[in-house]
Amino acid sequence: MVDDFPEWDAESIRRRIAELPAGSISMKTIKGKEQPYLQWTQDGKTKSRYLKASEREAVIAQVEERKRLEAELAKKGDVGGSSALTVAAPAEFNTNCLIGSALERFASFVEGWKRRACFVALEKYLQSSNDGKVLILYGLRRTGKSTMLRQAILRMTADQRAQSAYITVTPGDSLAMLNRDLRALYDAGFTCVFVDEVTMLDDFIESASLFSDIYAALGMKVVLSGTDSLGFLFSEDEQLYDRCAFIHTTFISYGEFERVLGIRGVDAYIEYGGTMSMSGVNYNTASPFATAQSADEYVDSAIAKNIQHSLRCYQHGGHFRRLQELYDKDELTSVINRVVEDVNHQFTLRVIERDFVSNDLAISAANLRKDPNSPSDVLDRIDVAEVTEKLRRLLDILNAPERTVPIDGAAVSEIKEYLDLLDLTVEIPLVDASDYNARQTRTAISQPGLRFAQAKALVNSLLEDNEFRAISLSERKAVAERILSEVRGRMLEDAILLETSIANPLAEVFKMQFPVGEFDMVVFWPDRGTCSLYEVKHSSEEHANQRRHLLNEEMLRMAELRFGTVEDRVVLYRGEARTIDGISYVNVEEYLRSL
Image (cartoon, rainbow, N blue to C red; front, side, top):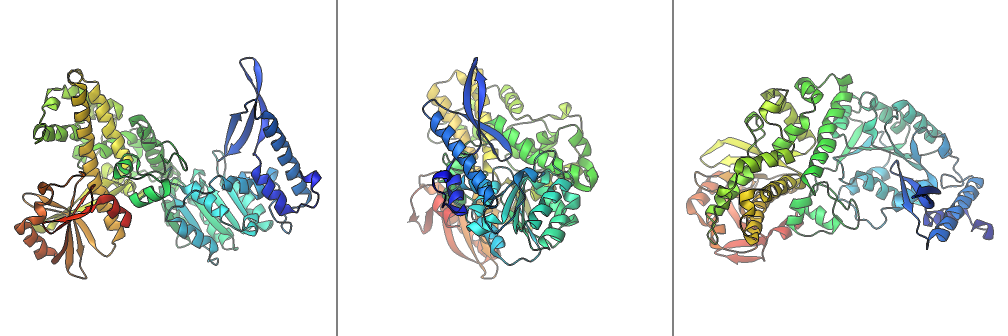
């Protein structure tokens, strides 16, 4: 304790404070008895933990020691972490602002956590000479933004942390309140400020230039973070033009998913990929895609409300265009869900307007009929209408007669534009081998877990069907797994096409379709006049059918005619590396990891 060690300097006191529990002791009446709880604030929210009898005395003593240490630190004039720095006391802030020992404790929560690849760009901004720009860290929920900010603070030197502050914007905060705190921080000598959830400010878009034109121009490093990606893009267009740099966190590759979270396997990535979740150790331990309901809530809060909030705040709500009525009637989430479910990834008016039919179910039924090992017509005997109706209810999808707002092609195009800006949807090129100029695209979902959650909902609805329940347990399991395997296979193709395209910006990456058959992926290098051909298989076993297209002389001739010398012919699958008939078999996880 400080009274026992009067020679302790401020730095020693801060280190000891960081080791002690934050918060205070509160008493709650449970079943007529008062019980002690440790209560603290984290990420702007009040949290508490019940103190067991065996730990009460020690924890209470630690809390009291921390309070005495903080009082001693204040006497030394070192609330912010440096005896040479005079800062405003936390009680004087208008917003939720952390400095000094509170900031250090806040950052220490992520000690030992692995960092995302884009963290390098964040640290580069913080360490570079000031150029008057603000840094914007944005992306959908649960993609690691707040964790990256904590990691940046944790890696600072003691002097750098002493001159840094972390502000979390909460509902009810205004830009005027935030401006007063920023001014107080600047006047006190702070040189770096992190503002999290800044897009929650209703007047952020219209007044964002405050951060660049005043505080960044005065020499402060300003990092803005938030989940409303559109809000940042609108502010760049309106207020922060050429005065900001961007780091986007929404897309999470397989390699990063495996490296940071410690989860191996493409199936785990397909099921949970898209968020920093399911690590069991760090980040979020529960996936938003674990159930159809939680996935729907994620779509609503992270995507639909993202679009709605940004449009409401942009130009004082005057930029809804044709989406105004859809927003007013709360039907935007239904439209987004319809798009995600569509197995062909065709974001068209026809898909949205037609009555819902599960494409996964139809394709799985056809494949089960012709399965060479154990053909089955079980999906032909179930009540398809009843199953799809259950699935429709699970996914909160509205059919045309149930919607109050008619959806025309223009409204659909606008929704697609915003989904593209959020990086939720990505276009994958389709090349027709017979007509090179007739190029088309299909829309892939960049968060695979979101798509897979709805496939699981289909299986759950199947299990409730009376005809389906009449067959044996082993057959039910086999059919359910077959359906999910079909979905995994198609999603694996999309993931490989998307990641290969991102990793090879100088190449053209696409699927090549023939009158009969296709190459799942072609990587064309225009500068070299060469290409590589790929088949993508979810299987872990090798068989001749997987490479038949790569051995087809006519298909190879047409590919070389359009895209030059074929350098490689590869089957990406889940088995061991090998070469058969001149075709390279490559483990798909190793391939994705190498990107």
